[in-house]
Length: 343
Image (cartoon, rainbow, N blue to C red; front, side):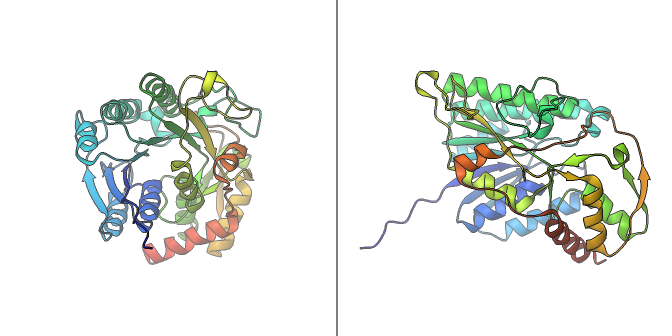
C-alpha cells in the first residue's frame, strides 16, 4: 500500500539572509519545506555576505525571497494572507549590544514594532506555531548560573536586551488573548561558518590573520556559552514540533517555563558549557596557526561578565543536546573564512 505523501509545510522565516536565518532556512529546505524568507538586507554589516547567503538559498526551488523590513506597515499581514504559513520563525532583529547604545531607535523599530506587526498578522491568520528569537542578554544582571528559564529576568543591561525582553511579554499577551502557540528561545553566543562580521570570532580571526591586535574586554576575564550554529538550528527545528499548549487549570509541570495562562514558553538554546574568553582565543590561534596580539581593555557598557545556559528544558522537550566543542567549531569557522575570503 502506497503511503500518502505528507503535504508540504510552509515556514515564514524572518531574517532569512542573516547568519542564523540562513542556516535554518537551508535545513528546512533540505527537509522539503517551502520557505518564505524575509530580509531587509540591513547595512549593519556587509550586505554582500547576506546576498551570497541569499543566492545559495535561492538555488532551492522551495525558497521565495522577500527583501523588505519586518516593521513595514501591512507587509506581514500581506505575507500571512498570501502564504498562510504553518510555522513562523522570527529571527529578524537589530542585533548587537554595543550598537544599541549608539542607535537605540533602530532597535525600537526593528525589534518592537517589527514583532508587533508579526503578532497582528498572526492574530488575523494564525499559524500552528510561532517561534521568536530572544537572547541570553535578557537575563541581564542575574548572577545565579546556569541561567534557567524560570528565573526572574527583570534587570536588562542594554537597550538591545530590553527590547528582546519586551517582545517576550508582547508575545505572551497575544498567546493568552488569542490562543496563539508561541515559543521564545534565548540564544547563547552563536558562532560558526557564515557568521556575523561584528561578532568576536569573525573580528578575532580577521585581525589575527592580518597580524593586527584584537580588543579583549574585561582583560579576558569573561565566560560565554558558545553555541555552534548547526547545533542551534537543529534545536530550533526540533522545537518547531514541540508546540506549547495552555495548561489545564493553570498547572505547569515543575521546571517548565510554560505560562499558566497561555500556550507560551521560553527555552534556552546553549551549549551548557561556559568557556573562558582566553580559551576561545587560544582555539582561534590553534585554528589559524597564528598568535594573537592582545589589546586588554575594561568591560564595555551594557555587557555581562558571563553567560551559561541550563538546557534541561530543551532536552526534555526535544531529546536534543548541542554537542559541538569549541575547538572543532572554531576550526570549521576558520576553514570557511579562509575559503570565502581566499586567505
